Amino acid sequence: MKRRRKWFEILVTFCIMFLFWILLSGLFDAFHLIAGVLCSVIVALISYDLLVKGKNEKMLLKCLRLLLYIPWELWQIVLANIDVAYRVLHPKMPIDPRVIEFETSLRSDFALVTLANSITLTPGTITIYVEHEEGKFWVHALAKEPGDALLVDQTMQRKVADVYMEW
Amino acid sequence: MVLIDGMVIILLAIGIFFMFVGAIGLLRFPDFYTRLHATGKCDTLGEGLIILGLIVYHFFHYLRTPLVPVKLLFLILFIFIANPTATHAIVKAAYLTGLTPWRLGEERR
Image (tube, rainbow over all chains, first blue to last red):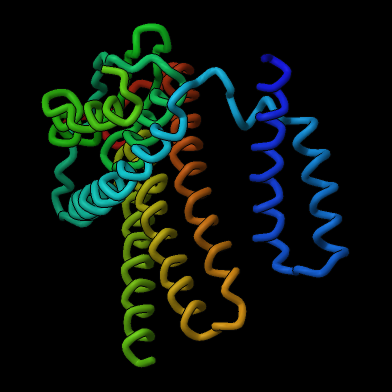
């Protein structure tokens, strides 16, 4: 069973590597395809355990949910960027920086990384530190409103928890 | 074609506007952390929009090389992963070193 798992991981890594090779080369003659297969096999044999973590079940479902989460996140980035542009260009510069901390129900690495990067991507908030065991976040907020969106509303936390099914 | 060129120009203009705002924020904001707010993230959207404009331009003007827009799309994806990670790493390093964040009412640093 463990051996089959390993070969499955190698196969998945190989497919991703070879697709990427075709995408980057754009040439479909025999020489480039064979060179691509050889390179992909070598890379897959060496680094199969880095790309695909086999122990996580429902990976495909989570990836699909993540794809649904990304458009919402992009829209949040646009809205928040306009907010920061307003604060930068306003003559009185209405900023009030503060460090806030909150706890989440997230535990897995992927979920924590997604939330931390989402927080940093939406302007007005930067993740300073993440406590791994308790799902605790320290966040630097540019003003009261971006911080309150994380402290009070917690929309982003709930969305990420939905994606990874970790309530 | 005029419509597409207009769309490309609008995308590039908005992207450059956000890069410009990031640069102004770097000069105006009072301390290390707030400056990173301006540069680290206005840049993400600015670069994203500029590359999106290039994708639209290339897709409609150079139909014979359809792989280039896909490569540019990957560029956006990697910027959107790498940029917040780098910003987070810099901020964490500063915070652990003991640099205290600026509060309202203090002097500029």
